[in-house]
Image 1 (cartoon, rainbow, N blue to C red):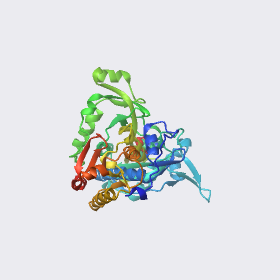
Image 2 (image 1 turned 60 degrees about the vertical axis):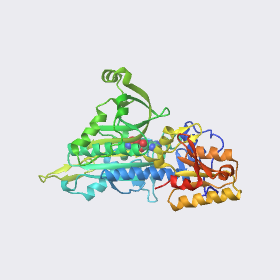
Image 3 (image 1 turned 90 degrees about the horizontal axis):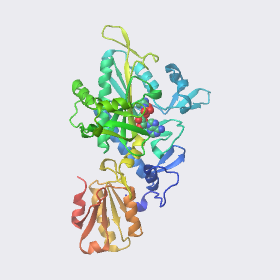
Length: 441
Ligand code: P5A
């Protein structure tokens, strides 16, 4: 992509409304624009990052055996009247009337709808277990939307829903999602610590939140420092190995980790030696729930059991804040100059900087590199706009692409370009004919 043909409205000055670094950097880098409180447009680079995160989340859900569907954003109120949550959800739910005066709502979550879909589609225990998920916009009329996309009103969530024949089988579905979350967040370059949590308006008996550590996080966190040394990647996971998956989960849940809502100071002191007691703040990027029959009973979601008798299915739900993660990653990965994208989610793999646009030799050298990189399938942002070198470097650092290739008249005379790693700041002079070979497959 040539910058001269792109849309990335960079702000020179810090926007006043941004209280935290991720919000400030996302606005300054031209990734998002606020349309109303907690309601954002995603501009090209922001949207690319959002899509990359969404794809990683999708791949790990698929790998864990979940099946992708897409439910609408607008839901009929009847379903929620059945579960009893229509009144209980309160002002956070955006209620709408259609032209026939029917009660509708903009979905804050989908337990009711998916349970109804499942009720109609499955009759026998032989069709269990199943896990259905979608990645869809939600609306919650939050009391205090803030911190940009971190606490929005309209936000993108991945929500999965599992259905099982028994409590024990449901536990395995829960454990599979638990492990898939560790893998998902690790692929995003994050360590998201699973912690005991409150279930709030979603309800249920068991629940874990996944939190990334950040000073600006909304929750206080207390955990055992030994968790840092755990295997977070879970690379060789076999999701059919019931005992193996349970052991992986147990490895985490047997160590103390709780948000302030569930924190028990006496237990923390008893179970964790002082030197290992870690406290701080965290951003909740995922939350998983086990319900038992909390939704299946009121919604009449039964299947025929092995003995011919009807039984209510055991369900769980599993959320990841996809749009929140964009801010969360920036919060975890930035410096004074701007964003530092992990390679897996960067809007472009690299930036090519022409520091003397109009100098025929530099223009030709840059075009050659740009075209060769494109031919190789490397996603490159080519700064081919007129402007001073200082401003170009600052903009590249701000938008945080993992690599920068800088070409100017002086280097060109010696046949070299400068290659800079955004994260380490390391710079290297590379012969022009070797630049392209450095990137891509
Ligand atoms: C789980 C899936 C649920 O809604 N029902 C379906 C369950 N859980 S949750 O904890 O309420 O939300 C799941 C994740 O969504 C993100 N999130 C938000 N992101 C941005 N702005 C918001 N206002 C917001 N509210 C929730 C969080 O990452 C949360 O873990």
